[in-house]
Each structure stands twice: as structure tokens, then as C-alpha cells.
Length: 303
Image (cartoon, rainbow, N blue to C red):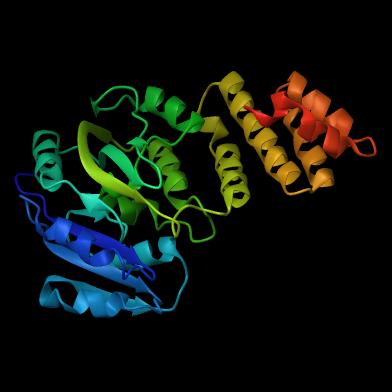
């Protein structure tokens, strides 16, 4: 693939404060994309008006509000490029992002998904987690790492359009639709490529810092259950599943839902027995136990 063409998919919902800066960072690429498609997800602010300044450089698809995964699916379906780049409406691309990734695609035409390093800025300021290795990744090692924690910053990703056609759309019933898609792709033996250079500055602000941590963790636990058999490591799978449930229990405990917390801690013991889960389950079974658990500093730290 000498000159792979790139479509850019931008899901946008009430992103008027940031979207112009994001689009400008895409237009400043040293390797320009074939097209930029913004899937407006029923914005009620001035998002569409901000996009009008770019004229024909941006194609806008408007629909009612259904969430980012549905917006991505609309943009991916409309895209014409060989690869599709994911670009949330509030992040900033480094100028050489597409150039570097297209060089990798030229050198390794077998790549299905290419991603790279990202830095978070705004409310938080730190480097995104890095996967084991760089360049073409070992599928087995990467699957293990991804089962423990998502190491793909979605704003850096290029996905082969044919892979999307083969695997189907992002799930629209999940809060962690991108994580499920990476696990689905790994299960299908997709070829992943990682560029350790900084590709994207990942903006953290009040509107995108999720207040639905419990929903996210529960959805992540579902994904882990679905892809446990692809891990081929029952000890690691059980440790991760138990950790999910302890964290779910912690979130319920913080919200005062002690019965649900007790059930989550108890379920975690089916996968892995830990002292914290045993103590929490026993104390939450007693009257006033929730207050006692809150006072245990060990349960206020790691799960």
C-alpha cells in the first residue's frame, strides 16, 4: 500500500469550545487526510456553527443524540479512506501524526490497527500507558497486557476500513465501546502497530471526565468475561475479574449501597480469595458494617 488514504472520523456533542482547535490540528497535518467527517451527535450548542468556518474541508453528518459509539459508526460507514482515524472533538494531533503512521503502513501493509503514544493535559497532566513493545506487536503478549488495562489511546488510532467491515460496528450499548473493539480485534488476530512517539495531546476537562465510573467498571467487567477464553491464562483472568468486582464493590460502598457492595465483594471471591474481600463481605453482612468498612484504611486504598 504505497499511499494509503485516510479518513478522519470526529464524533461531536456540544463541543463548540474545542472543536475548531481540533479540526485545525487535523488540517495542519504534514500528510493531509483524504477527508474529515464530523458526526454531530445532536449538539445543542454552537458546534455546527463552529464547523461552518471550515467550509468544504469538513463534511458534517447530523443526527439525534445517541452517544459517541453511534457517532463513530455513522462516520465510519460514510468514510471512503483505506484507513479511518478516530479523532474526538476535543483532542489535538501532533503535526506529523498521519505522516508517521502512513510511513508505518507503507512499510508494513499488513497493519490493521495503528496507534501511538498520547499525553493527557488539562485537568490531568501525564503520559498515557505504553504497551509491551513497539512496531508490530506480539498478539499474545499484547492480549495479556490489554486484558489487565487498556493501553490504546483511541484518539491516536487508525483502523483499516476493511477490518471494520469484517468485524462490524462499535457496540452502542457499552460505555467502553473502544475497549471492547480492541479485544474483539485481538480475538480476530488483527495486526496491531504501536508508534512510541507522541501523536496526540489528549484533553481532560470537566465535560469528559466521566462521572459514571461504576458504569464504566461494570461494562469493563462484562468485556473481560466475554474475552476470558481468548486470554489462555486462567490465573490472570481470575485475578482481573476479581479486581473488577472489588472495584465495583468499592464504588457501591462509596455511594452507601451496602447490600450491592457486599454482593460484589462476595462475587469477587469466586474468582480469587483476598483478605480485603473476605473482611468487606463479613463486615457488610453485620448491622452498621458499612461504616466500619469505610474506616478501614486498607479498603480505602487499592482494591
